[in-house]
Image (tube, rainbow, N blue to C red; front, side, top):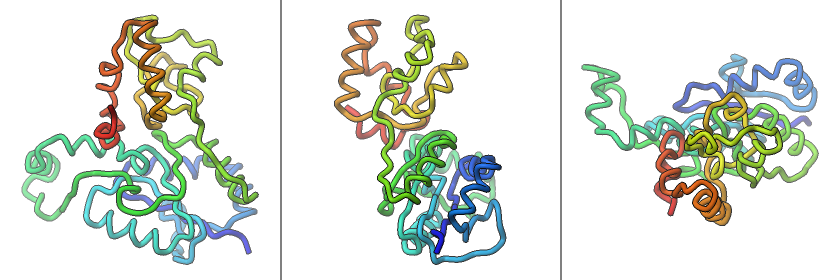
Length: 247
């Protein structure tokens, strides 16, 4: 029997779910090996007997919490996809604002009908078996994960920072231009897409392991006279939830 797969969305733009649909021909090849049984963006049928469930979006409302707990019960394996599901993402910016103010700004007089909670990654609520970070998640990484899962192999995220990918592509380091970039402290795997187009890394794939983070701090101070604290100050864009665990 083919593995039964589902794709779910919580509070998010659902860009990571759409990224799966954008795989087009590659998605057709996947469908030869798996059965998608629950995917609001792509089908009307629903089944809750699921081998692997992919979830995008942050837990940002009471309903999100109930839904992700239900997903966990129905899925043998649960995979967080995208920055919102893995890190809390942009949603966590509201955690640093006055709740009454942002609710009134968004919903006006109807705010009471839209309950909210501090935003958090799904791993803060339920056990997550794997994570595929990014904004949106890297489509090629999704394909690789599914291929590994079908072959019974263990999938691991890259452990090197984005800087390694920049150097492999011959991209001029943005620090040479005096621009603070999160590449030295952000997990690679995106093929340095933002620096490739002259934009700084915003950290959407999460912060590297602690030992790599310390090494990055030493290199930044010695080579560019930049303090790690100044770099970490930019983490809040995607990693506000992760920020509280940083040194």
